Length: 210
Image 1 (cartoon, one colour):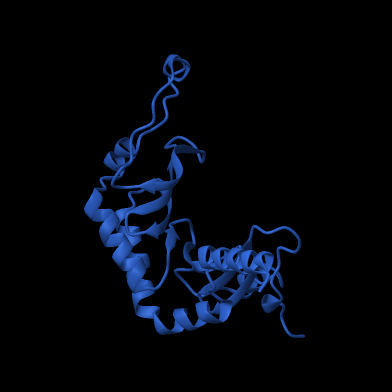
Image 2 (cartoon, rainbow, N blue to C red):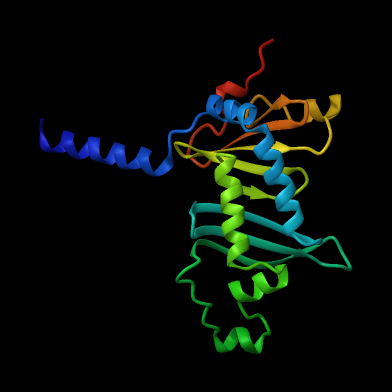
């Protein structure tokens, strides 16, 4: 085998190993198989997130996360970005160094310690949430309405699903079926396909049969 062919194979292997080989069919099967665990995950997350906060968290490993925390202003519908960082290592994380300019402007970057104190979270909270996600065979969750649960990556696309508290109305079913990035799967569950790749952002698997 020629050297450049070997390099090409290695690059392809690394790409798919890092991005994952999940599928929409796999996500459907997981929703069916893990319905109890998914409900327990959703209920648990709603319990640990205080009112007026929106949290999106994705686990890269048991102690490495992508975390985004927003606080709803009590006097308006606007949200304040409290924390947003990729690749947070819970074992070695260091609070950001504040610049004089930020201090003078009273715009200090919020630390992980500051945010977890506001949420009343600790290391055990992160561990328990990871266990709940792992048991449900998922990697992330966000408590927006409806709750979004992240299943995994298929190539460069994130596969996730929305879990509504109630069954969708006919109007909602039409709204959440766009033949592109969303498809109603069950009475209260919508599948999502979020591609960050160039070209088409749609998946042909969501095209409804006429």
